[in-house]
Amino acid sequence: MTKLVQHKYIKFGLVLALSISLILFTQFIKLVKNPESTPINWMTIAGLLVLWGFAFLGLLISDLMKKTNLKVLADFPVLGWVSIVSLVFCLTSNFFVEAIGAVDFLAITTPVLAFAGISVADHLVDLSKTSWRVAIVAVFVFMGTYTGSALIAQLGLILSGK
Amino acid sequence: MKKKNGLYFLGFILVIIFIAEMIGIQSIPVGKVRISILPLVFAVLIGMVLGIPAFRKGVLKKVYAKENVDFAGKYLIFIMLPLMARYGADVAPKLKEILSVGWVFLFQELGNVGTVLIGLPIALLLGLKREAIGATLGLGREGELAYISEKYTLNSPEGRGVLSLYLIGTLFGAIFFSVFAPLLLSFGFDYRALAMSSGVGSASMMTAASSSLVAMMPENESVILSYAAASQLLTSFLGTYTMVFIAVPLQSFMYKLLTGGKKNDKTRAA
Image 1: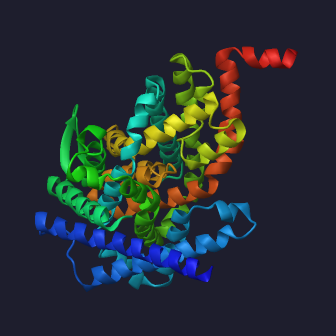
Image 2: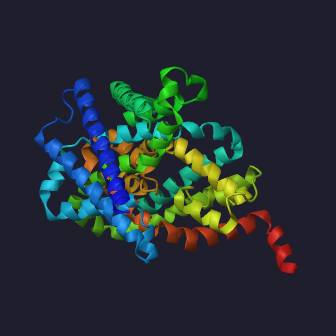
Image 3: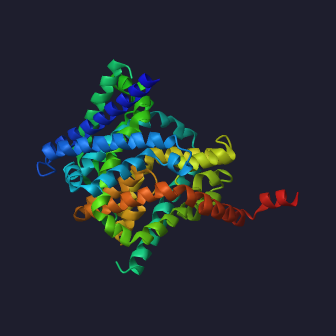
């Protein structure tokens, strides 16, 4: 059993290592394309390692919380835990903020979406089973949630005089 | 993951990133305004389009081998974790500022019922019936999926509705928001309001919306990313409650109102 658990976390660690390697690769390509973009230096490497550490810690916390009986905590997504872990550490030391800041933001997003694109490849076929009506509705649903929030937020900002 | 095909997969990811980054940020005119399309959009498009079964020959067949596509799906969330860790670093320096307008963050969560307010009438107008319940309750992510499958099962019309929305969102959500967010910006919305609303509850849609806003206004990167991330966190906490206590009652009220409540009256009379 312990062996299985160990194996699981080693795998998680390796996938996270793949993730930060892809970020580094993307940032490198960005520099090739535009030498003015975020440079790669030791802070970038530190930042990537910090990201790896926070992600891993968030994963561990999420797994621990799943064992608690508190539904609110057990259902909270691992993505949220990682953000919270990172937020707490970044509030305690500015070093983390600076290190993570040396990692180009957009360089983090491209690999994620490349992965996402491949992961949905097998679902493209299912799309033909979806009715065109729901597809039209989907557009309005997306617009609805975003515009709804934006209108309230806009009003709120005006009312608070910000 | 079989070793040999796995290497094709990794190589292919690098190629996608390379091509997407070489295309770079493209500015596309939409009417009078210009919208920036980010490399992340090209990355998701390349990954999807080359995966169309007709293209899966030769190397691509190995790239899109079942175990590789499964691997991408299963571990996508882990690949995303460093991104979520990055958001923590964006929020931290702005936390005071965010808390000072905290109530605005709270209230804009209610805007998520816009899915019901706008989506439901359109769905009924198009002739959808119970499917509309599943398709307009929310953004159709894991929360709605779980709720609908528990209440109606996924084999019901409601279940089909939410599953279809889930699929469409997974495929096109990020692309949609990367165009729609800058569009609203050009309509004159405050970028902070748009940044806040980017926390729609799906990490990839939030990232697409907020980073497209950043591409339009690089000088406000830190504010946009921190507001979007904070609002996303809030949605993770409150999303289920907004759905159960506000969206569900509102939806059933509007459904009865718009359909004349025939079905429900019958059951009540009986």
